[in-house]
Image (cartoon, rainbow, N blue to C red; front, side, top):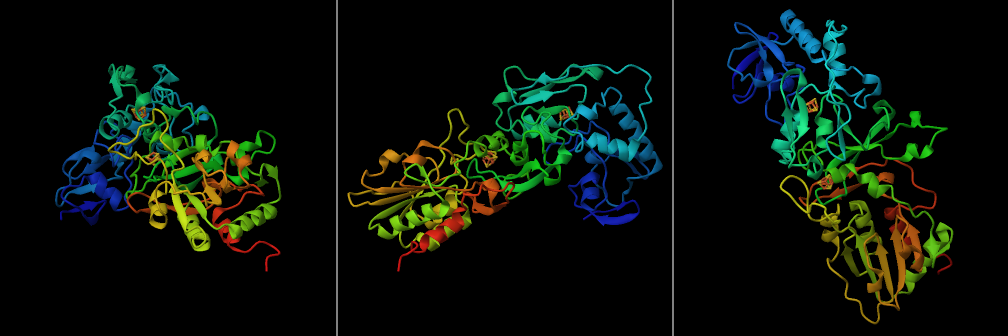
Length: 477
Ligand code: SF4
Ligand code: SF4
């Protein structure tokens, strides 16, 4: 193990490490734009310059360690050159932070205040370039803000392998451009480049001008879009910034979804479906218990469900593979003895045109918790017979025409659907963004999600509901 000296401190390094990696690992921050731990080294931003005794200045991201080297990350020479690099990088930058979505989480902004702090020294007019350039139907490019770090192009070449981006022309007229026959819109991982971009050059159309980031908080969660169960952050408005006079739905809406790095599951990436979870979670909700389509109070609906369960001789249950570990356990514990025939139902099928599977993250099963559900219940369609007198359907995706006509139906669902009104008893359930829980992914990794928003008054949590359904109906002795 080579020993090197960082600002006079001896530290141990591995032979295959660079000076930048050793510095970061040992708590010595060296600023960088183009370097990224999951991409190849480009070395083009020059921001990570350090001084090595006897060798002068060089970039730390591409400098292998050698025993005994003495590295200075904060010498006067390093500081002066960092400042000059920031002056150079902002030479043609529009500095339009006031209208930039990246403001508040922009590396260029942060570094300017940390390492430069002076206005531009240039007296020349800035070179103008294209703004709002359409990279795809999901991503806009502001070429004036681009610092040509090439993180986005490297991502499409090395990670998503769509090869969808490249650079056109040279010098101060260089632009990131899509490769014509490889549309970025067909790259199901394209939105990762918005996170990767260290400045505000790449903008998500979904998030464009939706909110300033400091009004938002990120709640850790799990993407239910497939059995990978990527860990994510659900961004939503901080309570202290709730709007009072504008559209108050903003207070309980998903502003954006970003990955939460998890080496055991998804590394630092997610696919675009994970970014689009608002499309799933923000459908029109069912928030009213019903008996045959007639709205009733929660207690009356629970009581009616208990009566049906108590009276059934051959009940069957279809269990949701969107249920959390806790909810599935609760069903087994409280209702498992009654519903001896409980089968795992597939709530979501792949949508038309959706990528089924690949080598990066996307998995063929488009449900988050089949692994746990399979551990506890039978797979496959139940074997109905003439005596089947009660079917409990938990969650979406079941064709009610398969249920024998003589059977009573208890339906537990979160969204508005025609079946809700057909069920003998309908009970509305909370969704993932309204409760805490865990999913088990296809590799057996358990990940936690936390609540972001309150649930409606008559909306029930499945875990508590199953416990309540175990009790005999009111008035029963
Ligand atoms: S668009 Fe962003 S990520 Fe791509 S090269 Fe420019 S600054 Fe880097
Ligand atoms: S790979 Fe699957 S779990 Fe991960 S973000 Fe995409 S849909 Fe969600």
